[in-house]
Image 1 (cartoon, protein in one colour):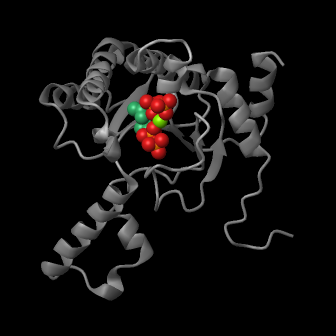
Image 2: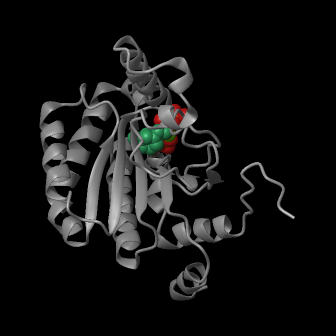
Length: 247
Ligand code: IPE
Ligand code: IPE
Ligand code: MG
């Protein structure tokens, strides 16, 4: 089916508001071609750029979150970790103006404290430079872990309780949610994982409670506009019950 027909079909039905992507399979993409893993990451960055541009230009949905580096990814060889951070920093510096002109607003989700200083600086500048945009809210989950996020909220709750500002009864689901680092984001409607593994790998945990999950064997560097539209079409065919009985 031509891309334009698929796009039209997907547009005709309700779209998700927040799509989150676990971008996996860069290493295997490179290995299959006899290339170093770093080349897979480089191609992966191009795939991310292509997708951000597509979602922004077509205004498919307003919230896109990309899982770029997990709290467990520190366990990779140091050279790979450094390469990933440099790649991201270059991406931000080189593409910022273009993305900003397309109406992209950048946010970062994760523990920024332990990131390299120059990366932190580029991220802060990009966040500041794009804060007035509202076509596409792009969140990069970086040094992010689902457990870290829940623990952060728990720490904030304890601090409030110690200050006498929070009682156990007042800590409702809504109050706890408001303490999460993801409080500003709508809950993800759709979580897509490329690369064939059917797991969350410590991505959104609390937030994923009612997300639709979509797994595809396509490796991240190959995940293109058509692949995204196919995922959206599958999402549109699902019934979301949220625990209720749907007659
Ligand atoms: C995803 O690709 C990128 C990051 C986790 C940063 P991988 O590097 O995990 O690729 P595979 O899973 O080894 O193929
Ligand atoms: C998940 O991929 C993390 C990101 C995409 C950033 P991993 O490659 O780290 O996941 P595991 O280790 O296979 O579970
Ligand atoms: Mg992987």
